[in-house]
Amino acid sequence: MIWSLIVVVALVFAGFLWYRSYSTKVKNQSGVENSASQDSLKNSIEAGDDEALTEEEIGQLEQEQENFNSTCENGEWVKISDSATGSDTAKGKLRKVYPDDEAAKEFSGYSFFIEGVEKIALAGNSLSKLDFFEDREVEVQGAKSADGKQLNVVQARCAGAEADKDVLDQRRKMMDYVAANINTITPKKAKYKKWVVDEIDIVDDNNIYVLYYDAVEDDENPDVPEDTGRKLLLQIGSKSDGNYDVKQLAYFEMGEDDYDLKQGTNKFSDAETTDYSYDSETNSWERY
Image (cartoon, rainbow, N blue to C red; front, side):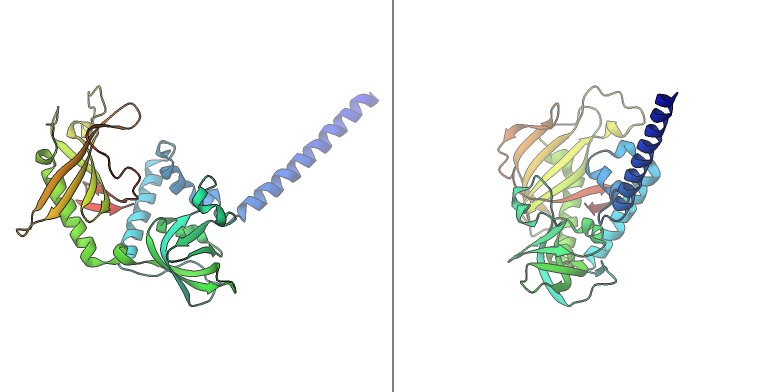
């Protein structure tokens, strides 16, 4: 009887310790700057785990991205912190710090940094708002530390080509041309229906990757035994008549896990690209 009482008391005490530990953990997590609750939708999409999201959540995230793209292209400031002050600025590509990224090791302990003429760490509250700016050219405003190695962020906006109307108009004109002419540009005819452009990744002013697929996959119940995805690396230049000179540099077909090179040379395999997806419902290109 005594031993039974001791066991019961021990279990109750262990349960109390677990509850206190759990409560503290939850409380601490709720104060983390880039908490899972803030970024779960965006991170799920980035990780390709969109099947875990509802259609409403995916739609919400897509709308947020579209709203941000408009803000970005207009060069509008996005308020990051209401409490921080300062008018120092830093310009360059906004990078996110990942644990396995050797290039960002010097910024361990931070979530973001600017890579420009000089590199500077970004600090402050509510920095999760900077997620949308990742890998874009930006201007960030705030207060620099005495050694100039850290900027306490007040606000941020897109800069350079990201907010240049002429550049953006030329990009969309070029992408519209490629999408409209993909069935004559591609080296192979679509097996089932016709080719449809899904994404264009811009390497620079003269080189792009085009991802496309057979329109049969848009059917409600497509009876297709294979993934029809294709990819092209194109060299493209404008002509005086408003059209474009297009030269194929490489051609890929979807393999088991990724695109397999079938023709040419993938000379920009390690290049950073500016990526656009085509929205067939709005007939528009969305930066992502």
